[in-house]
Image 1 (spheres, one colour):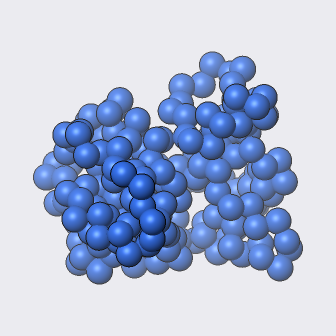
Image 2 (cartoon, rainbow, N blue to C red):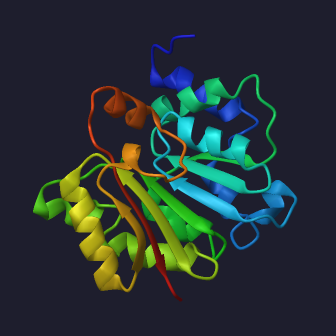
Amino acid sequence: MRLRNVKNAVNIVNESRYTIDYQSLKEYRGRIKELFGNNNPICLEVGMGKGDFIIGMAEKYPNVNFIGIEKYESVLVRAVQKLEDKEMQNLKLVCMDAVFLDLVFDHEISTIFLNFSDPWPKNRHAKKRLTSENYLERYDEISVGNTHIIQKTDNIGLFAYSISSLSEYGYTIKKVSLDLANEDIETIETEYEKKFKSKGVRINYLDAVKKN
């Protein structure tokens, strides 16, 4: 089904059994596990796009709970459409801005996935990058135990910035790759990743942990 306008997208997103609205999610802060009815680890994808990655992860790891956030209903709706014929109890999707992460989660997230985030290349926009100190402080507030970030990006500028920012903030870079396709690293591909891979674009990858 083609969506001609955002209004249709909003309706479809709101009616999905996989979505929860931002205001309702805030009421579960500190007890997000109740959404899933179990004590399994909770992983978060910030900027989930059309959902290939997080849906694939939820299917592959049924004993892990996954939450995907996306700022725009017009994008999130594509993930919702892919879930119409699926039955998964370990996946929730939320339309929200990442700046509000610490308002909906309280030391509950085991791993944070940052896949092909907006690089915000201009210096004056550095604070908007998802690996800036502005966001790293939020990740401390939402993580349970050590803060764990996995990032994939085609943008080498953002990748270099991320390594520097994470290192300065106290993270240990456990794994790093400048060509993920040629590494023995298990991952689920995103929509962008499939597109870039078909064009021979190299994907950068890092796995970082900060002890809290």
